[in-house]
Structure formats: C-alpha cells, structure tokens
Length: 209
Image 1 (cartoon, rainbow, N blue to C red):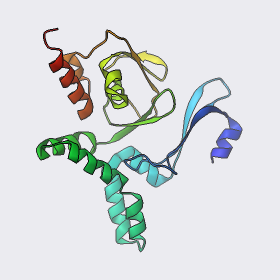
Image 2 (cartoon, helix red, strand yellow):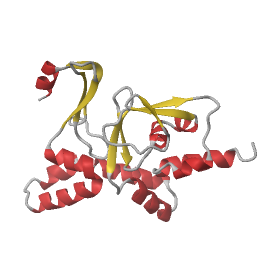
Image 3 (cartoon, one colour):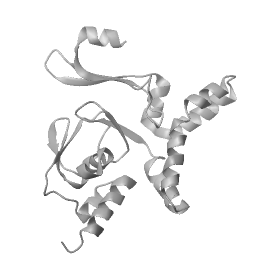
C-alpha cells in the first residue's frame, strides 16, 4: 500500500514513520508518510489495520476489551501478551515516580484512560495525547521549557488560539518567546496532568515576581 501511495504522490523526505515495526510505548501502531499532492498540498497518510485503527481511535480501554476477547479464543496467548505489554511497563515506571498511590490513580485516570488523539510535530514525529488536549498540552509533552515559553501556536500551518482542542492528524507547531510564560488561565486550557503540574510548579516558583 505504501508503494502505491508513493507512486501516486511524492513523499516528503524524512517524514516516513514506521510505528508498526517499532510501536509507540502505549501500543500505537501505524505507518505514517507525508506526501506532496498534485496541487502542491502536503498531506499526512496513515496506513494501519482495523485493529490498529480501533486502538488509535479509542485508546487503551478498547485495546484491553479487544485483547480480553481475543485471548479467550486464541491458542497464541503468550505471544500476544508479550508483544503488547510495553504500555504496562510505562505505567509501572510512572507509578514509581509518584510517591502517593492516590495521586497516581488520579493521574492515571486523567492521562491514560481517555480517548486519544495523535498529532504531529513539524518533523513528523507523533505525539500521543488525551482527547480535548490543546497546543499547551502538546508543548509540555515535547519539553517543559517549550511549554513554559509558549507564545503562539499553529495548527496545520494556521495561527490558532492556545485553547483550541487538537484532533488526530493535526500538524502542530509551537512558537516560543523568551519572555512568554504560563498564566493561571492556562490551567483552564490544559487537559494533561503533566501540563497542569508544570504550570502549577512555574506559578509557585515565580510568585511575587
């Protein structure tokens, strides 16, 4: 299929990502290729199976439900389990970093057991976020310094408000400025636990300045 796509449209160099051979930590699988169309537009193509699509659209909860159903009727259980436990290892690592179990469970509910969106950096890398995430969430997912100095954002090459909710397939670009910094209002515009924590931390450190 990828060969057919590239025979029809010219691929953008460096923008082919094989997340089937090397899945994301949460199990996301797909092949991504950015191509130039005949009219000069740049389009992101995603290639995946129905199962991969279901997990991409509906997140871990769907993944668990499907896997449970599959295991009941499969003789290849050890193989399936071994291949798809990467995201569980991520949960264990995260739990070790959070001292209070109540905080961990709250964070888990906020950032994992939600529908997901998969958006792209200008370099074509995939960023996996909970649904209703905004460019601010995206910025903090890249790096806390980028989040703390976010001034403006572009979605699909168009300037947009920082509170705009992202959709799967969006190309997101963050514009930073040295003097830009978080405000308390940002807490209303963010969905991820990571962004909330970083904003709170910045505001606490800079009180009275």
